[in-house]
Image (cartoon, rainbow, N blue to C red):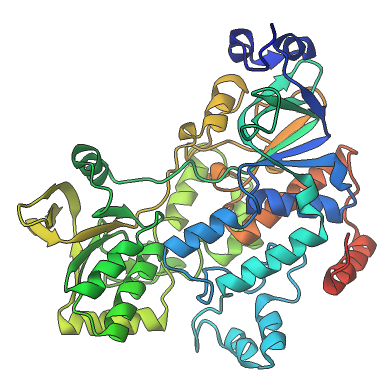
Length: 503
């Protein structure tokens, strides 16, 4: 009797035939284009294709989330960026608007009837910090564009298990539907094209913190900044305490701001110890025309990558590099950094002068609980080994980057012909087709964090996701599947966007 589930023959075979799925009793749905993930990467790709004239019936978004900004909204909230606060994104980087006009700054000026955002943009970064949009504004604009392109009609809920090549060309994408919504455990989408935008595999903990959580079962006092940890701030409102913050990027800056804001607003006595693995004391870089500002432990940069990666000389140079030459260029321009915002600088200066904020350079080798309930961290630094006591530890070192930790990507590496780029992530062509995965006249594309290390830096940004989507849409047009967005269609579609009319 057919079970409607994956059989050993399917699991062990890299290229499937239609008959194999029929024999397994798995229902097959036909659609030309499938995008896997359902986050902002899937959204901007579907947005480009809809604006290019592809009907919603030809696109399916396979996702376990209900709307494209859901995961990003969650991550910003738990990492202390509530909707009124501003994110780290350029004014013209609008995932809801492929033209980038009007910019977020212009839209905010119009909405609030003030010239202040425009004056701010004109003065950046010399006379003012880089202007960035509010998180809530981004979510509202995505909601509007989602409705305009009929995103809900393209969305199919479920968990994608794998993508396998089809013997006759194209791909099979295996989906596990929500319980009770399907007569079989699996369903399959048969398509000519597949796009992967699955984001990061999960949270990443430093080894000593992971060992502590596993050994002691304590998930309350050692937390990742990307998981819910509001209880830390609530505890500090009840009595004085010490928090150890680890990491020197944008997330650590946001956590520090939240701790200091609460301290100032509520008159708390919170003590902060900030541990940097690499302590930056000043401007640094390989040569004088490629230097980044720094100081007090932080490396400063307005955005994730230099602006020239999105359309300048650096973007052109990266497209010519392969192998270790490309990896070397990434090493020179990458690294942990945070914007140098005046508010943060003022708060940290006050903390250093008041003695309640202390920065430590070193590598934490071990963490253990003391008898009084505090956590003791053994920090090995340049000046020797010190013990730091804290009530809570907040890990701000980032998200999991190893693509093999993601089930779909791991299967693609094992059975789909995909390989790793010089940074260990998915190797893609300049048009974001995953190398080695071609299947007949079909193509498999990928964009977002899983492709970092490719010919285009800045992939895990709003503008980077849009550039990838444009490259993918142009490649699909070259293959004759959809129309290329020319000047006339671009203009007419922008007018429709401005008026809120459906595509």
